[in-house]
Image (cartoon, rainbow, N blue to C red; front, side, top):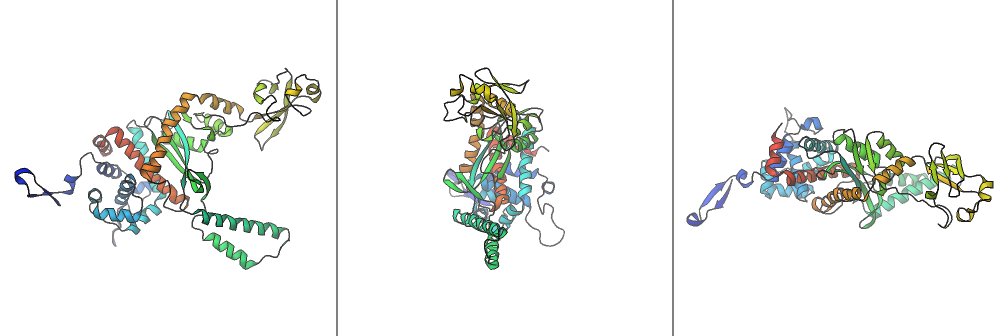
Length: 443
């Protein structure tokens, strides 16, 4: 119980005030309390969700999840800082019922509940879908780099050890050197002891640094993040299909869903697979066109593909037929007859070789289709949908785009908490505290 000082005639008089009176009805703490209160903690995988019959009871995971959601909303991610806030912050005193868990208990909860926290975030999206905040018609996908805990120096040492061992293995196979077993054992032991073996160098806003590539899928209706994943991929090329499929499940498996992404997601095979599952990608094609000479020759767009005959027609009206399949490049190679090219008046503008070769991607139709659908209007929708959430995550929730937990699993836990906090904040801004709290309270 607290006391406040009266005003006017009652000035100097102290009146008792309860914690509940200090927290407004539309406060975010009440929203967090209502959301966590409706979760099936045991079903989501949280440990100690049901109190043990014997022994000293552990902290209820509901309380620790509330603590972390509040902390991430306030840019407080450190377990030691959260411990301190529990002892001085009136809002947390109300939210946790005056519990003051120590930093070890707080950190342990986050460490062991990676999957459960991700499932809790998915439950929040299911709720958002049930109240009409997620439609699933248009979803934008993007990736951004977040710094890992490991320093650049430690990762360079790790990579150097790997190269050293690979070189030894290669030399040993060729009987070129005499290997010192003790040196190999020492290198292996040091490699095993590296605290973050998954972090690799990526290009970030601060230059090249150890980082993870965070992928998000954002529903265009209200910019809620429906899916997020921390990856070790340095680029986005192979993320279109897995993120699109995960987003479709998250938004309720609509018969058709439009997915927007930038040119970094240009992948013909994955685009074709998406279309087969009712996902229509809108992605600019990212590939070079003219691979002939210094760029002065006819580029591939000057050659017209004939689908029925599976041939190309060149600018001179001659036919290029299918010759071979280049699996490494995922392309089919077409060529004209040497004698035809040799007698052609346009040969000087076409090729310096005996005949012209043209490549066609195995999934050319899918690449062309998604490129044509990526209109300027659609790409503006992508930017307005997916870029703002990343800025909010990095500078409003993280405070600084660097993880506190080591390894991809730890980074995934942090990102799940951060995205849950972001989605709660977004829903709070859309519906207001009273309506959102009331919606959570309806079972």
